[in-house]
Length: 395
Image (tube, rainbow, N blue to C red; front, side, top):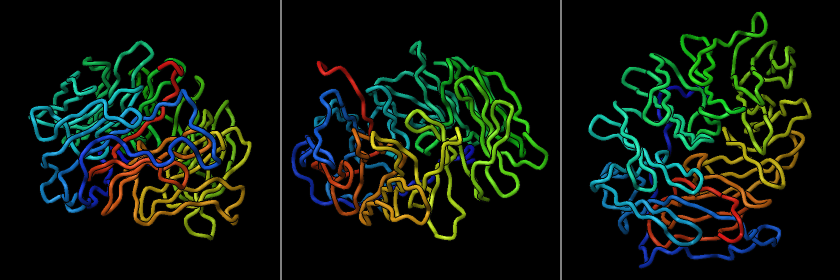
């Protein structure tokens, strides 16, 4: 959870086969879901896909990302934007550097001692220093908020557009882009994030820093966030995960492994790996105390569809697990040994189904709905981000 000022490693690279001409996404019964239900007419899907030269082994990536490829941005089954890699534009091929927000493709790339941020291929920010994004947020007023980590000195910088709001000399941001728990978020009209430094935890709201005190003697802080304008603190004491809110501390579930506060489907959960005797069990305990659900997976990401909560383990193998009420339950689970999902930004939901951007060793990238492939890209490459947007049917 406390990934700090380091880019999380992703399993970059998978090999490809011969790619045919054309860029359009080949549909595979993409009009229906697991239960035969049609895709709602007001659903728009977006995907960021890196196209590599035919036959290039992006598992080994012998050219260290300096291949002559393209970053393609898809709306539905057709590309609406193509950005060349290795050309004049500062665009990185790395998973974790492409972010889809509100139908726009944001990219980040370090070059020439600066961090370059582009929106739909147009430069919008050139930030000084070699760094990377821990948070990216478009405010209600259209302002672009960024939280940048600079590994060289361990600093964190919050900016509104090009203006520096606050710079923290040393700090580890809690959460991050693609990590299953965003570092930067908006609550009740305020821009917030949490960081740790020297064993202490701090909350930042609109640039103001406040220490997060342990709610009880002997409490080990795990996470903090604002929720509906109120502070919520997650801590561990007496062998269990406890939540402090509204002036009261409540034991939610026993466990010694670190957990975090995660929003899914408009509700707040304490999410982590279970200490239960069976291996590879994750839990999501509702912050309102209404109950705990379990998932089959190792360090997965938590998501929600119209059918309820599900989790996704990105690789080793790719695993989609639907929630159950007990850790010993028989889990409705999909496993794909030959597929991977790079980051949490490659996961969404359509109707009752999970919706994933999947990259395949020795195969073309796919879109997966539930346990069925619903689209194949006609070239060698990999998917770095997807999004699902609800828009008026007329668009």
